[in-house]
Image 1 (cartoon, rainbow, N blue to C red):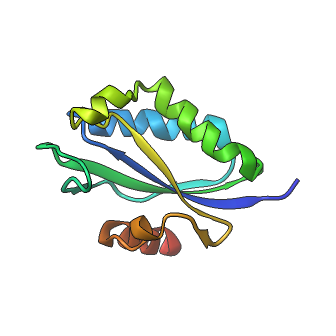
Image 2: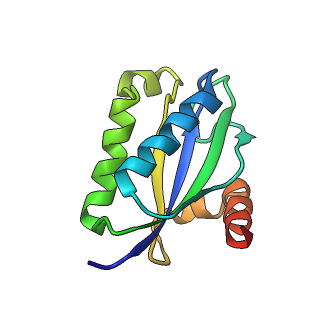
Length: 128
């Protein structure tokens, strides 16, 4: 088994964002069981969704032995566990969004990777 380096974007627009992201960090630790670092949380305006609520975002850098074929399904499972529902998204509520941004240096979500808050978070994690 080999070690993989992943960057995950975490986002939510619920009122208890810091508590929810704390729960996400704990669940990521259980699921991926590797070295983990998290950027500071930042507030951003909604992108590609009709919502009056700002988002709280964070980026995770994780080294894990989890095979790449399982990473996305683990992330989707965490979203479901924490109550993400499509009908909420349609109403402008994103309880939790976990996006696999990069895997072993390959950028998987180029438009997200280019966002200012993601660039700042990646730079922060690189110097931590």
